[in-house]
Image (cartoon, rainbow, N blue to C red; front, top):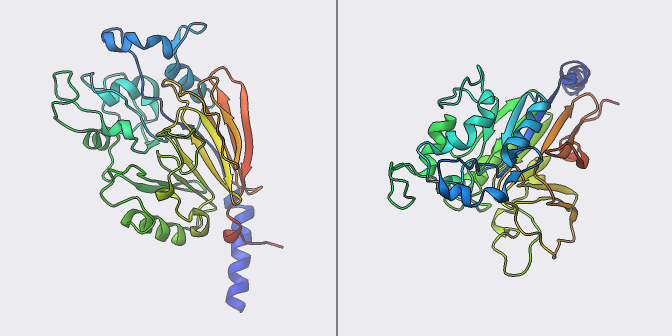
Length: 328
């Protein structure tokens, strides 16, 4: 009993001192679309991702907005590259905009970061990226999974890391994952065990495919029952995803799921059939999320901004109640 009280005192001391650390990070998704003048195929679709008032592509406008926050780091919920027609796909679609957050940066667009501040996950289109030197997606060569690992210096398709007081779990929700995506898969059990052993104040899970998302009947972008793992029971605080090119916040049984797919690619047609759990749905402009960790007050504030700085959504996430401890 005395040991338990002593540990409680230590925890409260850390909560009021060490845990006072705060940080800001950006969240982008489905942005890997950088139409180049040298490629006529890109030019054909340029009007769908071009912002005349800024004389910029949407991906650049969103990147400018994210970098204006001076975030400590950036996470990407996938689809960093949509195309297999360029000679250096990931760099052409990522390097011009986010190289200053990547280490080691291996591209041609300038200087990268001295420490890594960019944490992506594999998207379904990332898998479809190829380099074969012929401008043909079907000829083979290195596939997207290999290129993604090489470009972002990753040894695994899913991984975890801690920044400040937040433990992040970057998952591979794509069906191609060799370790599976159902609740009993090697990957899911890896997450369950990692969450259980984490002592971080906040725990964020993110992957590309959405867990819950509104869709019309017959759509190919709908909620995925296979991915509906008991994230809350396992100790997560929120799940972030992309894939669908609009923004949506759903709260299912008190737990928040975010879809953030408006980082710069072509917008999807909006749905007219919403989930009963949908709190916010948006698709009028491209944008990104800013997350601010307030460790002292015990919350993370999530905000969705458009590229021209319009605030669309604003909410707080507190640590999973099952994981909270009281200092009173």
